[in-house]
Image 1 (cartoon, rainbow, N blue to C red):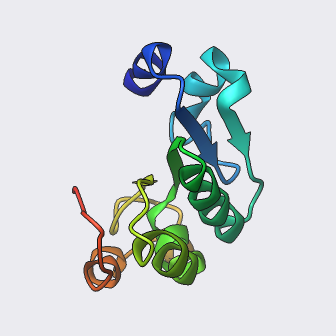
Image 2 (image 1 turned 30 degrees about the vertical axis):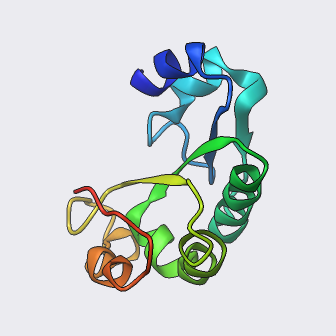
Length: 125
């Protein structure tokens, strides 16, 4: 809700998700700002690459997915396209650590450890 409110006065804010808008609460943003919402499908690599491209064009992207998919599926794209380039991309990860009942495929046990080694990246837990 806060992002949707903030975007009312900041037209450069865009939201992206990898088929998880409902589960990361980005659906609230999508309903209020459909012209600034990007549904990337189940493709976290594309999600992070698109966010990087939008940042290069002056937008302020907020990309949402589960922590395990960001750390395992999109790691290289986050590192090379966002962190190494020092781009202003916020990626918001749901289900950190062992917080999910979906089993090991959705548990991000090493997410913070992986991201701590990236340059120009700030982790807020």
